[in-house]
Amino acid sequence: MVDWSDLSEQLKKLGVQFGKDKPLPAPAKKKVPIESLVPGREVETIYGKVFSSNHQYSDQHTHGAVPLKPFSSFQVLCDWAQAGHLAESDISGFIFLDTETTGLSGGTGTIPFMIGAGHFNGDQFLLEQFFLRSPAEEKAQLAALSKFVDGAKAVVSYNGKSFDLPIINTRFILNRLDNPFDGIDHIDLLHITRRVWKRRLKQCNLGNIEKEILEFNRSNEDIPGYLVPEFYRNYVVHGDASQVANIFYHNEIDVVSLSALFTTLAAILENPTSELLSHTEDIYSIARLMESLNREALAEQLYASEHILTSNEELVLSLISRGRIYKRNKNFTGALPLWEQAANHGSPEAALELAKYYEHIAKDYHQALDLTVRLLTEIQSSPPGESVQQDILRLEHRKSRLLQKIQRQTS
Image 1: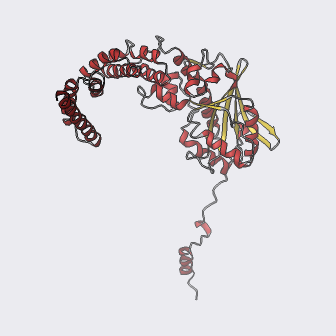
Image 2: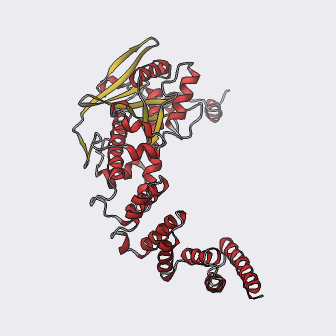
Image 3: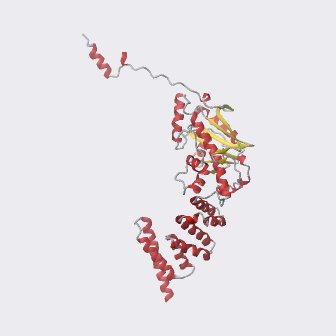
């Protein structure tokens, strides 16, 4: 006679489920289309339709504490980007661009499922967000983007040179479409933002710049950038756009902040001696930037700012920087007291500049040797390290050379 209970147990061990042990199937997730959550329209192209959410801002709009549209020249900003010819261009020729992608590492497998682009048109700032409801719409998305940026002279981004534009360029190549960004200038605000504010701010990501510089705070609609790829992946798999709707807000603010940041940078770089600039670190950073752009008179004026003179660290850096400008112009009469003052504040760099001056310009080898020996003694008492050891070797070599020069001079 068959032992049914024993057979049942064996079947269960094999994974067979029946009767009350069999779990109920999970209820199917409800599909929520993006059109029901985000106001937008379908853009018709020769490759089909793509969904776009469009926004309009007045050119008088204030983003945080900053006007959206530049109210000053942007010559210095364009010079820094090695695109000085753009300074005479109308701002309407600039495209402010940001993407949201399926991954953060780049490469041919990364798709920009949302491309936000904005530009000024008359008294309005027009922003379009071209969104892929399905990867199959990519060709239509790129075609719609091409039409939007047609005639642009420059693109403005935040880390776009390293991330956004290479990804977009790859998608145009893979889809065998003409790239509208070929041959136009690119102003990547990330790098100049770091040049200006990195000494004062711990982080220079766009979110922190919004809070600290633009004085803008995002609403609760925003989501962290690292969640964007996951939320879109869930949308593609399940068709539920409830999480994706917040990505539109995230991308919109990114693009608007780009314009406000462009306005801010243009204003402070055109008038860096303005009383609005009071942070010592910022003034020193802008002075370094001006020096790198060969605006030496303005750089020296900033280095000598009364705000810088209140901080010992920035004061020493300022003295060395001013001395560097004088030295470059062979004005050692102006450089010498600056190096001496910095050396008195404990600057090894200034002491070394003095030693070089007395050896190569004044030919006062005894004074150069005295400075070298004092500097060598100070460095030898520093914590050991590879760079310290290299400095010691260089100073030992300088000391030996000076002793030989003194001996020859005596003979």
